[in-house]
Every structure is written in structure tokens, then in C-alpha cells.
Amino acid sequence: MWLFSRKGASGFSASSTAEEVTRGIDGTGLTAVVTGASSGIGNETAQVLALRGVHVVMGVRSASAGRKVKEVILKEIPTAKIDAMELDLSSIASVRTFAASFNSLGLPLSVMATPFILSKDKIELQFATNHLETMKKTARESGKEGRIVNVSSRRHQFSYKEGIRFDKINDQSGYNCLSAYGQSKLANVLHANELARRLKEDGVEITANSLHPGAIATNLFRYHSLVSGFLGILGKYVIKNVEQGAATTCYVALHPQVKGTSGKYFADSNLAEASPQATDAELAKKLWDFSLSLISASRSL
Image (cartoon, rainbow, N blue to C red; front, side, top):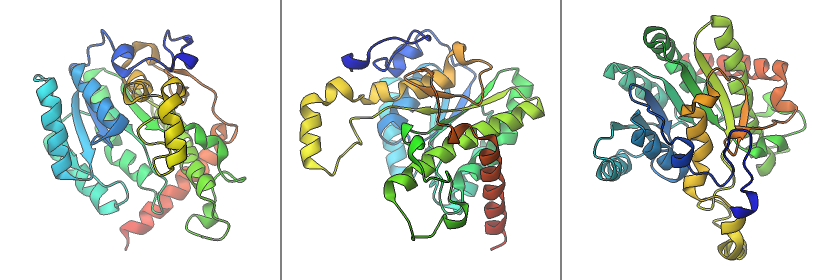
């Protein structure tokens, strides 16, 4: 990543790793829910947060995979506080079970680092609201700031023309895979922004931000051999490795520089500019209300 190593205002750059951006930070007393922790940048995020003393609860699709990840982390960090619980963000039933199981542990909740998904039943909003009251209670009782981190993507800039196709969420007509992906990433940013506004209105010390982790070598163009070959030669100069890819998530989740910052978008461990659609307050509110209506409908089924 030497081509993009220029440091920003935070003192970090695209080349910074998760360990570098959290060096010297003591996360003892904090509890974080991290999804996608069985591999890639989610796994690295969980490891680095655990390294800094955070009690990490990993939301993983496979219980067996979760146990293996936990074993690996404990082998590398014997003092780590880490738990693995099943969570499939594409299933409302799984989300509810995870929330109930987490609440039964009686743990505080300070950080949620998750790639919220715009699925057909809007799981991302339900996942957040299922834990919001726990976070509010933790913030009030501990006096420590809670942080919600939505892992989005720069692709949020390339959604459909209307931003979110509320009337065609599950309609295959006019479907475009790249625009649909952009729509889901746009939803991540809009969700964080609207949540930040609502938390501020509530007067609770919890922030909500979104971020672009960067193009990661482990999961990009894996099905295109020609491109993969090209990246194998030049990728190390322009594509992030896992340690670099997890940096912005860990920075937003733990770094003191981000204290009190809410409703913002980050990239390369620095503040970045989101698209005009992503900063549309009316669109964010409409997405929130639309998501709530779908969740309410699912509960009646």
C-alpha cells in the first residue's frame, strides 16, 4: 500500500494497520459485538479489540467456526475475553435468538462493529434496535461512550438513481447487481446517520458512524482468474491486506480522536466525504421508517 501511504489529519493512512491505530489504547471494561468475525477483516477486528482488552462477543454463522476462531485468538492472546455466538444476519429468527442469548449473559455493551445488511426484511435495523437499550443502559451506568460502527463501502456512491428503491426492494425488474450492492452500502451510511440523529435527540452518550474499510486483497475478484493474477503481481501496492482493512473499524471503535464524533463517514482511519445521497436526511428518515414497517410486519407473520 505504499502508493497510498500519505497520512491524514488523524496521523494514519491507508497503510496503517488495526494494531497501529489502536496502539496504547486500553479497552478494558468495554464489551463489543463483532459480526463476520470468523474470517477476513471481521476476524482481525475481533482479534485486535481483544488484544486491547475489550470483551469481544463474535456473531458467527457457524458455531464450529466460531469455536475454532476463539481457540486461535486465545492461543495468541491468552488473556483475551472472547465469546462466539451463532448469528445469521439474513434470518430474523437468528437475530432474535442472538439478542436473547446476549442479553442473558448480562454483559454491558459498548461497541457494535458490524457490516449491516440491507436484506429483504431489513435485518440491519432490527439488529441495532435489539441492542440499543443495552447500550443506552451501559453508557448511563458506566459513563463511557458507546459506539456503533457500520462497515459500509465506497460503493455506496453507486446506488440506483433514486438511492433506495423502496417500491422495488425485491423486484427483479431493472435489477443491477452492482447498483444493488451500492444500495445496500448506501443503506449502511444512511442508517448510521439517522441513528446518530436519534441518539443525539435522546441525549445519550452513544455515537453511530459508518466507514469504508478499503479494497481488501482477500475477498476481491476471487472468481476472476485474470484479474486475480494481475493483483497477485501489483495488488500489494494498491490493495489492502487484512490487517490494514480492519484498521478503520478499530480506529472508529476505540480511538480517543473519534470521541463525540457521530453521524460521520470514515475511510483510511480519517474523516471522509460521503455521497450526496448518503447525507440526505430525508432519505435516511424514510429508510428508517420503511425498515421499521417491514420489521413490524415480520413480527405479525
